[in-house]
Image (cartoon, rainbow, N blue to C red; front, side, top):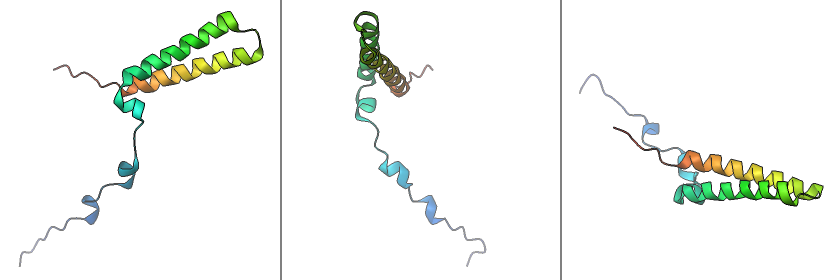
Length: 87
């Protein structure tokens, strides 16, 4: 019988539950360019409403909300764009 027996831990073979249950966003993984275009559309819509159509508090609030949603969408889509490897 060998003197040094190397036993592997059972946790080395099991995968974490967080990795199994994490399902990424469909828009984020399928086509991030669409997400960027959608975000730019929201920003442009918000700026248009803010400049030309903002006659009341509701419209200006909707315009600001549209700009914020557009910026957040563009940021999330930019992080999901695959990076080009330069070798």
